[in-house]
Structures are given as C-alpha cells and as structure tokens.
Amino acid sequence: MTDLRFDQVSVYYPGQDGPVLDRVSLALAPGELVAVIGASGCGKTTMLNLVAGFQAPASGRVMVDGRDVTGPGADRAVVFQDDALFPWLDTLGNATFAARMQGVRRVEREARARAVLAQVGLAGAEGRRIWELSGGMRQRLGLARALVADPAILLLDEPFAALDALTRETVQELLLTLWGKSGKTVMLVTHDIEEALFLATRVIVMAPRPGRIVDAIKADFGRRFLAGEATRALKSDPAFIRLREQVLAGVFARAAA
Amino acid sequence: MHPFDSQLALPGVAEATEPSRLPRIARGKLLPVATIAALLLAWWGAAHAGLVSPLFLPAPEAVFAKLVTVAGDGFVDATLGQHLAASLGRMLGAFALAVATGVPLGLAVGASPLVRGIVDPLIELYRPVPPLAYLPLMVIWFGIGELSKVLLIYLAVLAPVVIATAAGVRGVPRDRLNAARALGASRFQLGHAVILPNALPDILTGLRIGLGAGWSTLVAAELVAATRGVGFMIQSAAQFLVTDVVLLGIFVIAAVAFALDGLIRLAQRRLVPWQGKV
Ligand SMILES: Nc1ncnc2c1ncn2[C@@H]1O[C@H](COP(=O)(O)OP(=O)(O)OP(=O)(O)O)[C@@H](O)[C@H]1O
Ligand SMILES: [Mg+2]
Image (cartoon, rainbow over all chains, first blue to last red; front, side, top):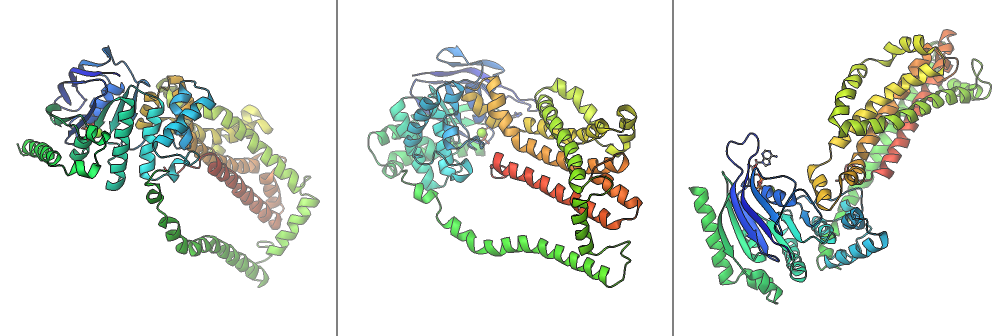
C-alpha cells in the first residue's frame, strides 16, 4: 500500500508561454483509484509522467511513500494509450518483460506471467505475436505486462480510449476486479467522464492554461461493483447520472468562460 | 477463455479477404513472368529474323549454349564457376567485414552524439562519391590485387549499414523506451532488450541496400582491374566482341543480385516478422 503526493508542482515546456502545470497539489491515499479528466492539453499525461519519473517538475515535489521521485522504477508501472508493446516479443515475452529485467529465473517468471495473463483473460494466447491480437487483447496485455512487475502504483494513460464500448466496459470491470484484489494505488487518466465516475473513488477535474485542478468529486460506484452490483444498473443509477451531469455542466461552463 | 474473445477474434475477417486474394496473387506472379517471356520472344524473333547480326545480338539459345561451354571449359583461363566464386568471395568477404564493423559503428553513432559528430561527416563526405571515382586511388594505395577491390566494396556497403543502423537506434518510439524503463529496465538492459531489437528492421534494410550497392560496385571494379571475376569475364569478352559471353555475364550478375536480395528478404521475414505490421 503506497501513497502518492503532488506538492505545489509546476511544469514548464520550452515554447509555451505559461506553465503547463501551475502549483498542482494532490494526494492519493494508499489503495485509492483516482481518475483525472480534463480537456486535451491540460497536462494529464504530464502528471503521469512526473509520477513515472519520465520527467522532473520545475518546482514543487512529487513523492511516493514520502520519498521524492528521481526516475522511473518498477514500483510504478505505466499502461500507455497506444499500448507500447514490444513487437519482437510474443504475448508471453511481453508479459514476462519486467520479471526478466529483474533477473527472475525463466521458469518462475513464465509461471508468474501465465497466472497474470489468465487473470486478464489471455490464457491460451501466450504464443501469439502481438499483431495477431485484437485491440482489446492488446490493452489487456499492456495491463498484464504492468501487473507482472507487481507495482505499488499503477499509472494508466487513457488505456481504453481506442476500444469499442462493449470491450471497454469489460476491461473496466477487469480493472476494478484486479484493483479490488490487489489494493494497488491507481491513477487513471481518461477523457470519458462516465468511465472516470464508474471506476474512481475520486474524480479530479483539470482545466487548461495553466493546467490546474478545479474540482474533485468523490464516487463509490467501483466499490459497489466489487460488492456485487451490476455495471449497467450502476451506470444508470440516478446518483450516477446526477454526478455525471454535474461534472459535465462544470466542464462546459469552464469551456464557455 | 475471456468472455469477449470470440467477438475479438473477428471470425469474418479471414473469409472476407479470401475471394479477392487468388486473382491478386495470380496477377502478381503472372504479370512479371509474362513480361519476361515477351522480352525473350522479341529477342528470339529479332535474332532469327536476321534483323541484327549475331555479332551484336546472338540468339537466346546461343547464349544458353555458351552458358554450358563457359561453365565447363571456361573463358579466359577460368570456368564460370571460378569467375563467380572470385566475385562472390570478394563480395561476401567485404560484406562480412562491413557488417562486423558497420553495425557496431551505427549503434555507437545512434547512441552517442559524440561518435555521431565524428563519424557522420566522414560518411557524408565519401558516400555521395561514386566508388569508381576513388577506385584509381585505392589501386595506387593498395595495388591491383584483392585488397583494393575488397576495400572498395567494403566502403560501398559500410555507408548504408551505418546510416540505417544509426537511424534504427534513434527511431525507438519514446513510449516504448519509457515503458521499458517503467518496467525496471536499467540503461544497459534498455540497450540490448529494447533498442537493439527495435533497430533490427532498419539494420536489415541497411544490409539489403548495402548488398545491392556492394554488388554493383564490385562488378564495376572488376571491369577496371582484375584477372578473374564475372565483371572481368564480361570485359575480356567485350574486347574480343564475344557478345554471347557478354550477355551471359550480364545475366549471371542479374541472377546473383536477385538471389542475394532474395536471401536478405528471407532473413527479414524470419528475423523481423513484425516489420510493417505494427
Ligand atoms: N515535450 C513537450 N514539449 C513541449 N510542450 C509539450 C510537451 N509535452 C506536452 N507539451 C504541452 O504541454 C501541454 C500538456 O500536455 P499533456 O500531454 O500533459 O496534455 P494532456 O492533458 O495529456 O492532453 P491529451 O488529453 O490530449 O493527452 C500541452 O499544451 C502540450 O502541447
Ligand atoms: Mg495525454
């Protein structure tokens, strides 16, 4: 169980007049699943990159378990929007990658990867090349590859955006199930308000120029799904619809302003 | 099994492409064959109609008959096999040398701005110069023997191999590198577990271009200075106006180029099956 803090974090990019992130503060409790939504270009990916250690803030601190992030590490795995799988490896090879980097013995790492692949519904696809997988299977493999690293924090950058509605819902349920079992801290970037509300314990709304947090909404639909309620029932629940409209209204009001 | 796997497998796709496939393959294979057959026929017709003297254009069957004699009895002191072996030996020796040095050099150029700053101008300086332009210099420095020819081919192969390898190293998608780093890969591990396999398609493309450049350079070099080799055979035959051997030599050169290219393409299909698919 790991917590995550942004403390007055600012980021500038060369060629941009203002800051891309302006003194952003945010804390994720251990085991929390936070969704970040906001217009394109408001700095969502930048926030994930900071946690992943791909880039450093201009000012402020990004801390995992009270320690400053200094670079990438297997304790924070990332699932990218365009899966970023390794095409020279087959499905099993992609899934075992993190364990191979850690020097885990072949038999052991393959056993570990097979177990995770089965969890995400990819049992039987171990020997397939990645271009033989459908979009949904590739996203699940991206998730499996991150899970085999057994990270304390899972960072997801619009991982389901390219999927059709039906597949997306299945993968959302899968993510909730895995999260419920593992208790990992998850930070999910999405464009889809419904997805954010359904999955997250807290939805963070961001606004652009400069990138900043403008709203935070608590939700418990993910926990209710884990407690046994049906997805469709939850997504058509009056409380769900009311929250969705509230978030949308806020987003539109700011867009108009 | 995952509940959505059956939908995700898209069972209709395979059948959907099937009907249009047969004619396309037939067209793809038949058209080139037909073109070559037509060319042969025109050649045969022109030679037999007495339009052109056999001195300028021997009949196809005469060239084929020559293939049998040159293969058996030889031409200018060596059989066709010996000429071919001499050419291929130079080619493959230079190619092996260029791969053994060009790939590591390309990796270094791609990975290090320092190495790139040193090597890039050197390559860009000699690459645009046609090899035949500096062949005389090689002959002055290294003599008329094997060394100057092998070095000439080596230089022709080296440039495309280094350039393609370096481009492959620099062309690793940022997400792929970041994904590997977030999965715990160290700097050293990034090199051999991500950057090298990622550059492999480019490396093989560089080898393919290099092989083509090397082969044409070699044949040209043998026209100028050699005592054995397919290029030399053509040159000698031309001096005595043995046109059928000239034609024969040209066909052998074309066939070898085609075969070498086919070998590399086979290697590409085997080693980098993902090329063009992801
Ligand atoms: N490497 C970079 N150099 C310069 N500017 C950049 C760079 N990366 C991002 N930016 C800019 O920073 C801003 C935030 O980018 P970021 O990728 O974090 O947005 P985002 O919220 O993830 O957007 P999207 O929803 O479109 O993915 C954008 O205006 C973008 O143009
Ligand atoms: Mg983004």
